[in-house]
Structures are given as structure tokens and as C-alpha cells.
Amino acid sequence: MPSYPPEPFRIKVTEPIRLIPPEERRTALLAAGYNVFAIRAEDIFIDLLTDSGTGAMSDRQWAAIMQGDESYAGARSYFRLAEAVKGIFGFERFVPTHQGRAAENILSAVLVRPGQYVPSNMHFDTTDANIRARGGRPANLVIDEASDPQDRHPFKGNMDTAKLKAFIGKVGVENVPLGMITVTNNAGGGQPVALENIKAVAETYHSFGIPFYIDAARYAENAYFIKLREPGYADKSTLEIAREMFALADGFCFSAKKDAIVNIGGLLATRDEKIFQAIKNELILREGFPTYGGLAGRDLEAMAVGLYEGLDETYLAYRLDQTAYLGERIREAGLQIVEPPGGHAIYIDAGALLPHIPHGEFPGQSLAVELYLEGGIRGCEIGSVMFAHADPETGGMVYPKLELVRLAIPRRMYTQSHMDYVAETLGKIARRAGSLRGYKFTYAPEALRHFTAKFAPL
Ligand code: F0G
Image (cartoon, rainbow, N blue to C red; front, side, top):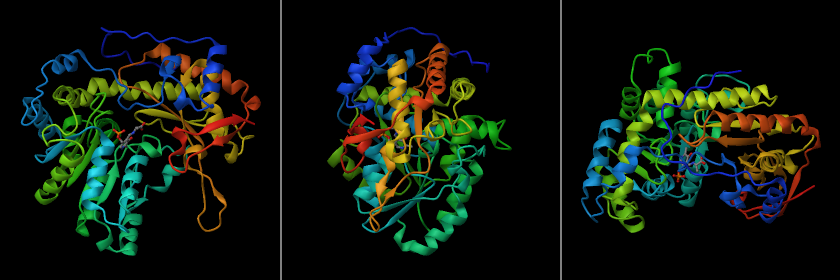
């Protein structure tokens, strides 16, 4: 059995969770139209739907919350956050936002014009959608290794700089208002990006005069992967590595709901004074005054403390080991996962487990439903429900290469016994995988359909 890292914290506050009986789970699932997004959280035993905003705050964060300064303008809490942002990221010009996608919206509103392109390794779906909402065209230029689930490349989130140069050459530098990279690459399995690669990407963008922005949601996990895996970084602290990463960037957007371990919050930062002015104007219109940006003073306090806690190396070692432990146990239970395990989640290869269910009958959906029925566990389908679409030219269906179920691990929330339970439940399902059936839509909206679609079993 793989070894489990002892949690570097003890539990001071608890929240009950309950495994409701099998027949009640079936009733809940039927009422939800077989979509786990529509199940009441109270009816879930282990909730691995997302690691976003679901983490447990520390006693220090809760203490900081009591010190929130709720002044409309110039609150003390803003200046505490500004110190953390300067100390970690090295940026003076930044605004708080209520979450990551609000930062993406403002960044896109300020920089992206219709018909322009925004390359990245892989955009997360909200970033993708915010660029498109401004008429822009997101492009994913991750290395080829990322699409092979069994390839164990240590930095599978890296961007292909040859592809990037060719891409900019093809679309024309005047049509690329900014370039991005996502760390870690959530859409590609939570895989890290090497510092060497971030440097090469920054140099490429800068050689064309294109500003470089980082989608920093899981930057601390990325920094710890660099420390573990990249030659020359073993003796650097994650804080030093983070500073080195952000020194290369002209700006970043950040969902604080991940590595700042808060339940709500985000950031948008830039080095460019003119862009900063435009960001502030847009922020005032949509989020709030620049010193609070859609958050309460107490939220800024919790973020300021959480930013440093998220970088703590004892915590990060535990965090990545916990994820790897779950991956190892799931592998032992006979399932294939996207290798190597990422930082925040394990991505199960449902296509490999259920070869008898074709793409069009949603193998990932079938596994997500079974996880709930068998063990009250909620994961998230990342496959044909989310991505399959009709080709605009031929009308034929285009299916994603991989049919995955993501099990995202909330930070500081679940213990080893919860992870063991998840792996054991998956083992039971794997032993009768041949009996699982496919699903069909009974309702599906046009866009982002996984959130609200309804299904029936075949
Ligand atoms: N960027 C990345 C890489 C993300 O993973 C997310 C959110 C966002 C931006 C948007 O941030 O939710 O604060 O608006 N990811 C969540 C997830 C929702 O489940 O992976 P947000």
C-alpha cells in the first residue's frame, strides 16, 4: 500500500457529512435527472466536484476575518492584501475581484477585440468563454505529450514554443493582444509547467512585443512541482520560485478559491499603468471600488493570510502527496488515471474502464452516476457531455479524445480514510464495469451544458 502523508494540521471545527441509504441516493439522482450538479450537497457523502472555494480555512484565517475593515475605500484590509500581493507576486498594480472569472472578464474587456487570438497552453473553460464573449479566439498550444494519458512527462502542462511561434506567425502579431499560460494546467489534468518553459514562453511573447499574463489559480502547487522536479530548484523556497515565475509576467489573473485557500476571491494584476487605469474603470462598473473589488474587507484579510499558507512547503508536500496517494490507490483498484497525478485532482480514464460505452453514450457520465449510487461520491465528468459538439461544416459529431471523470480534492478537508473509501468504491465499480450502461440527453442547453443537462439511462 502507498504511504499516506500525515496531515500537517489537526481538526478544530467539524462539519457532519452523511451517507444517505442507497434507495435515497437513487431517488436523489432521479430527481436530479442523473446530473450530479443538481443533487443537494447535503445528499453527498464525499464531494470531489471541485477544489475551488471548498477548502477549509485555518484558525489564523478565521481570526483575520474578525479584523476585516469594511470601509468602502482605502480599508486597512486592502493594504494587508497589497503587502501579500507585492511580497509574493511582486506586483504593485492589482485589484481584488470576487473570483477568477471576474478577473478574466475584465482582462478580456480591456485587451481583447473581436477577431483577435489569445494563445495559452490550455485555457480553463471560463477563460475560454470570457475571451469568446469579447469576440476573441482562444487557442490551446500545449505540448503533444499532454494528450497521451499514460505519458509521464514531468511537466505535461508545458506550452509548445515552436507551435506558439508558428501560431503568432500565422495569425499575425497585430492580432494577438496578449498571450497566456495556465499554471497548473487544470484542463489538461492539473499538470505543472516548468520554469524553463515559462521563461521560454515569456521570451517568445516578448520577442513579438506581446504582453504575457499568467492564469495563476494553482501557482503554489505549480511552484512546489518545480521544486520537486526541475533541476536547480530543489534548494529554492516555493516563495522564491513563485517570485521567479511572476517576474517574467506582465500581469496575471487569479482565482483565490484554489491556492489562497479561501471560499471566495480573486485578483487581477498588471505592470502597465494605462491598462491598470482601464482595469480600474471596468472594475468600478462591474465589481466595486478598486480597494475591495466585489469582496468584503474580511475576505481580503482571509486571502492575505491564505496566500502565504498556500505556499507553505509542509502543507504543499502533504497536498501533492495526498493527491498522489489517491491516484495510487485508484490504480491499485484497477482503474487507469491520467498520469502522472496532477496537483489538485485525479482524472479517471472512464473511456478505458468502459470500452463498451461509445463516446455518444457518455462513459464519463455513466461512471460519475455510478460513483454517487455506489458510494455517495460526487465527481465531475470531463468528456463528451462537456466537450462533444457538432462540426459547423459537416454537422457530424466531434468527440473529445478522452472521457474522464475528475475527482478534485478540496484543500485541508478530507483525510486518509476518505481517500481510501473513494478508492474502495471505485474498486467495487471496476469489478462490475461491464454491467454499467450509457446515457442519453433528455435535455441539453446550447453551451456549458454539463451544468444543467438532464439524462436518462440507456
Ligand atoms: N482558471 C483556472 C485554471 C481554473 O481552474 C478556474 C476555476 C478559473 C480560472 C476560474 O476561477 O472559479 O474563481 O471563477 N476552476 C474551478 C474548477 C471552477 O472546478 O476547476 P473562478
